[in-house]
Each structure stands twice: as C-alpha cells, then as structure tokens.
Image 1 (cartoon, rainbow, N blue to C red):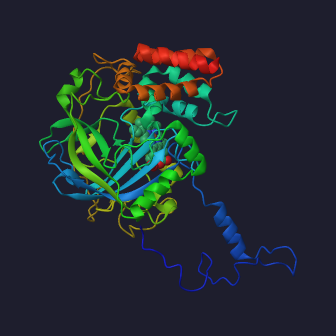
Image 2: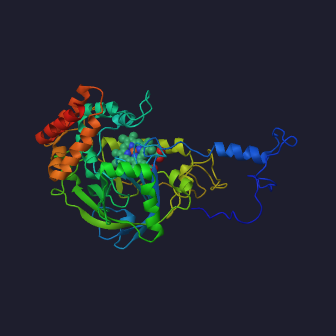
Image 3: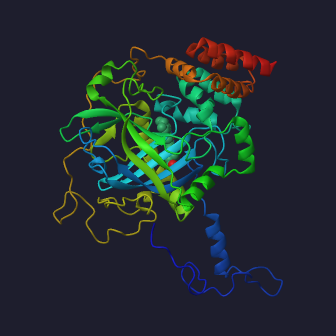
Length: 489
Ligand code: HEM
C-alpha cells in the first residue's frame, strides 16, 4: 500500500485542493431555481462517480484477497535456483486472491464453481505469480477452446442467463472435460469457505537448478484448516442469505488473528521421464498419480493481513502466469502457453498500461528497471533518466542469463492434437476419481449432475453428456442415466 492519506484533517476540498463551502446543497439560480454549471463541486463529484468502476475481470470477477507469508521448510536447491526457495526458513511476502470463475462481480460466494487461487510471491528477483485454482485439472486442454468454454458458463446472448443447454452441449462435445466435471459436481465443488479448500498450480511448470538440470513440477497447497464443503442444499440457502459469506469469513478470520495456512507441496518429475510417463504430463485434464510422483512438502503459506482498500488492492490486483523468476519457467502445456499472453493483455485493458506500477502489483522486494515509459496514469517515477538500452549513462543492462532452461522441440508446425501417452484418453482419470468416492459421495455426485443435466431442452444433449460419464465408468453412466430419466419423466 502507499502511505495512508490523512482524510481527517482540514476542510473538504475539490480534487484540485480548493476548499468546499457546501457539500449538501447544490448551487442554484435563485431559491428553488435550476442548478448552475459553475458548481464545480457538484460537477466534479458526479463525473468522478460515473467513473468509479473499471471493467470487471472477464472471468474470476468475484473475489477476495489477503497478504501473507510463504516460508520455506525443505531444501529444494537440487531442483531449482529460485532465490525465494533457496534456504530453509526463508520468508517471502505474498498476496493471494481467491475467486469464483463464472459469476459477475456482485454474485454470491456459495456456488458450485471452481475457485481461483492466484498467488503472488514478492521475491527479490521480481514477482512470481502462480495463478491456479482449487482443482488440479481443468475442463479443456487447448487454449483456443477457452473463450468458447467460458461463453457457455456465462450469460446466454438471448436469455441473459446461464443456460443448461449451452453448458452441457459444450461439455458433451468436449469429452476431455469429463474429469474436471466429475470433480466439480462432487463434494469439493462448493467449499464451505476459502480457508477450507486446497489450492493447486494445476499446470506443469519447469524448475531448473544451478547446474542447469530441468524438472517438471506441480504445486499443491493443502489446507491446514481441513477440507470442508457445503452440500448443494446448504449452499443454495447460504448464497441467498449471505452472498458475501466467503469473503467475510476470510476477512474476519484474519481480523481475529486466526490466520489460515496451507502446507505447500510439489510433485517433481525429472525432465527425462516426461516422454515415457503413462499420461502426457503437459495435459491439464490429467493429474500425475501420487503413487508415481509423491508429494514433497516444501513450505508453509500463511495469510495474515487484510487489504486496507478492496478496490485498490483486490480489484486492481493483477496476476499473470507469465510472471516468472530465475529458476522457474513454463512447460509446453497448451493451456499455459495461451495464458502467458492472455493475462497481460487483460491487465492492460482492465487496469491500464501502468497496472504493474500500482502498490499491490509492483515488486516489493526489488524494483522494476526498464525503458518502458508514459501511458495513462504514469507517475513519473523515472524522472529524467534515460529510457533506452543499451546506453552508456549507467542505465540498467541485460543479464544474458535466461530465467529457465531451453526445452527441446522437433517436428513440423501444425494444428496438432495434444500427444497421447500410453494410458491417455478423455475418461480414464474421471473413472479413477469416481471409484475413489464413497457410496454417499457417489449418490451426491449423481444427484448434482442429474439435477443440472435434466434441465436441458433436448434429449440428444443430455444423452451425449451422459455417454461421456458412462465411458469413464459403466456404473457411473447407468446411475446417471436413470437419475436424469427420472427427473425428466
Ligand atoms: C487458456 C485458458 C485460459 C485463459 C485464456 C484465461 C484467461 C483469463 C483472463 C483473461 C483472466 C482475467 C485476468 C484479469 O482481468 O486480471 C483470468 C483470470 C483468472 N484465471 Fe484464467 N484463463 C485460462 C485458464 C485458466 C486456468 C487453467 C486457471 C487455473 C488453473 C485459471 C485461473 C485463473 C484465475 C485464478 C484468475 C483470477 C486471477 C485474479 O485473481 O486476478 N485460468 N483468466
């Protein structure tokens, strides 16, 4: 945050600092007469009010954030040279924004939707953003499908509401969604609070050590509060009675010193094993089995400070999967690759070209130094310093050291499908997940799915959607078909 501004001393002023004589009566042409255009206090106030909103995020519009501390608890220097991970006990300031995906800014918290888990580490090598969700997988595996997918989750152009037809039409025709949809309609689809859920980096990322050895890594944030969920029925009541339930719970727990924390774990795959792993490790619709790559605990994340001003620090916060630091880089995951572009572009549209200079977004443990200048709301921080490189006036210089290690590629360019490894298909891991569930969990999953599928207007849309679950597990498909048939009878 910038220095708190003392709004308690002295008279009210206009934006240009002139004292305000009357903030309750507009200036009128005579008692009972029309208002005057010379009333700068009135005009400025109305005009500023009209400009209070910035565009809400096109997805994840609804959210809450808090600052915290990440502490390293295990030596990972043999995997990465990232400085913030270089020593056991080392602490790094963080900012975490939680969100729902589909709802607008004012929508309710207690809904069935993935939760965003966007984490900024303010490291001495610049900000590292890990922009994940509370789920380890996603609905699709290629960026080019994302706008279509989100259109089906958002408001229909004709009805202005979310439509079951659009959701199930897309999911039915996109069988790679079967795993994530099974997760979403299971018990974890509606967390009881933001504190009682896990977080995931979801994608595979590259770690590289001092010797240049590469590893593929997946991040897990295990809630220390324990997993707690709401049933569909509980959530429907809560969403109606208290739409802000989750953001209030987070703020109040931090206010009373009950700081939520997560145990940070990673799965690590030596780079050479990627080609032969039974699942494509860069396919975001798949997890790496814990039996194959056990989770290693590396740190603790604690949230311990609320933002002072929600608009300045939460609404204007920006997170980008392209914000890496030395020792960490992207994988060839086709979802991640598209996201490396999408977020910076969204920030420049939503918050502006100088979004990175705002207090919540700028590096806290170092400074940004480059030749980028000017644009709307540029604060003149560089004074008269030179704005080009190379220069002989002592300006900042390039290091010649890439942040991450080069990745071998081969073959012709083309609109290729994501390569399939030996066990890859669209259904296998959805089947695993279904069979991990207890009988009551399965019953709730079937009821949640059937309640939504039954709303579609065409039988073929319902049938195609159900067929995907049947391919994941025969029992799953049969029970779902029966439940939908009963509701549609
Ligand atoms: C390739 C597909 C995707 C695209 C094109 C995309 C695009 C976007 C855009 C444009 C925003 C709004 C950013 C802003 O206005 O600041 C956003 C927000 C977000 N996305 Fe994605 N997204 C994709 C997939 C994902 C995936 C797979 C995850 C999680 C694993 C994810 C997690 C988030 C989160 C957590 C936010 C909210 C960030 C915040 O709190 O400011 N997105 N996404």
